[in-house]
Length: 289
Image (tube, rainbow, N blue to C red; front, side):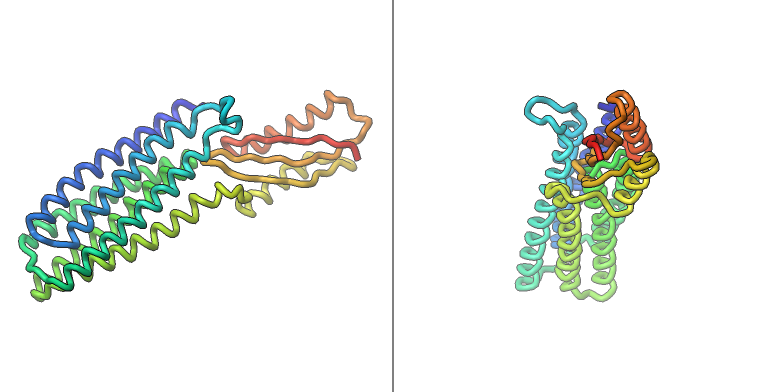
């Protein structure tokens, strides 16, 4: 287990929890004071982001723990499960926002303190812009799907906050109060799109899909480079669990090779692959041709 990497992942997950908690308090307070359904919808969105941040926080703590008797292949898929849960939370939040917005259209009410709501939305956008960038950077460094999902949440929150702020500004300029619930519905539709993309990305590794074709091609080239003479390989299989990659294949060797020679060849191939791909386990089945 890489302690430094895990600490970095946990640290940014904790940052996400802190920032979301502050923004929920701000948005909900201003939303209730102003009566703006779009601001309240943003508070709901941030609350779902907070739940997702907690899920991400616990999943990254678990995913890097070593394999044990109950989980002999490690705990990497905890991050994928985290991503699926986060996607479902976003999905629920989007439909709740649409429901509240339709109620507001049916029974319109004036929105007060528009300037205050506008300011809070801009603050939210700026905070989430910088926090999401930091989390996304760490997600890429550590290949963490849970943190990438968390960063995607906050990135979407930037867009939705700007959208709500624009709606409030338009409402202030025109006096047309239906802009507020309409803006909330647009926010919800964007959130639905986010949830679908996140669900697809997080769920795919749970089905043991192969690594991207470009990575498989690179792995094949590394193996082929070590195949001299009549040596060959077949049945290359790849999959991913969290930020861990698993590769196995069959290697055909000359039957005159000793066990030691076969072991040395396998070590070279494994070293090549692990230099190119971090957090990778390689299993080689040696056969005679």
